[in-house]
Image 1 (spheres, rainbow, N blue to C red):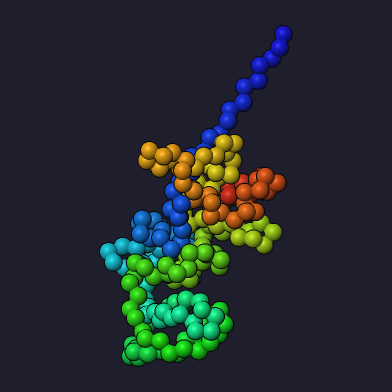
Image 2 (image 1 turned 180 degrees about the vertical axis):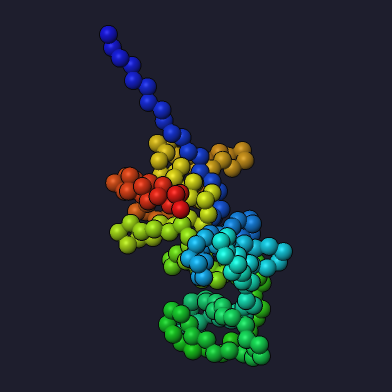
Length: 211
């Protein structure tokens, strides 16, 4: 008698690209879970009623986003376009000295107001594993060989788990042209998508779920 073994294939259809990108998450009213600077438990950063607000889920800590200004320039030496964002001072001058972040050339630039909803749009890559508004460390954060693995919130964390453990992965459907666009997983670092790291990454992500 021949035994028939049936294996269940885990199928995963990806989400649209940038859905959990740091630079646009707040436009979708997503919450970002961070470490509270007072009690070191989970706090929430959220865009609400025209203002970014941090509130701790355990203690009474609360903070609103400070005003920011920007200077945008095209460097005449290295030809790079750059944007500098800094906190607004009470008596803000109309012109500021700024350095090109690529070649350190000094410029005098005109100060412009930064729209609160567009703050941080020039920094899509979250290389510091901190939120872009207050600079607090992300709550769902761990490391594999000194490389950060992070999630903005529990929904994002579940997405990562579903993606990593899937056997069949498909790009997101886009109207009448299914699987024609890149999904959010396109942005994930390569080390997270390597087969040899699959079990290690899943272990880390599932450990985050228990926080």
